[in-house]
Image (cartoon, rainbow, N blue to C red; front, side, top):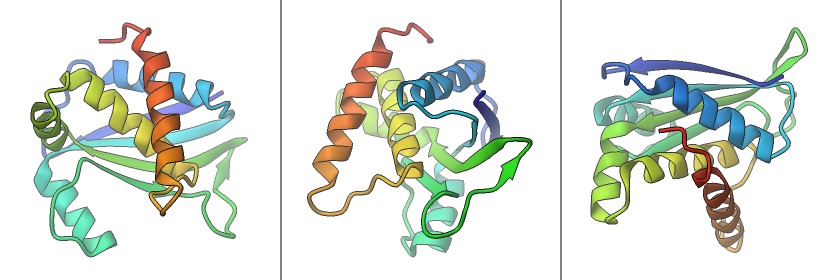
Length: 151
């Protein structure tokens, strides 16, 4: 059984936060992820900017950051048979701005960054040659979950 822990920082918790949990669980199922937990932090640009500066050396806000617990040689933490995949941090401000710039629906852009974050937790990266593979997988999953009328 998969689980999702959600919290917010720097913003009021959106009324549809449970729908995001459902989305994460659906994406995990589509990726055949089992017995795993993901932590999802929804925040503003100021919070994600500080995290981006601290962990990536980039003093700018971004839409999504992922902190995987399964990369490298270390085994992920396992508690009561549930493996911790990692943490996804999403700036709702940045997602909204990106959606407006791309003339994209806000909810679809939010779904896209959640999928993107989960793929990063699994080790997908933007390395040359790999990005198109990651983006293709992301867009296929997005198309599949668009049929799920979550919000």
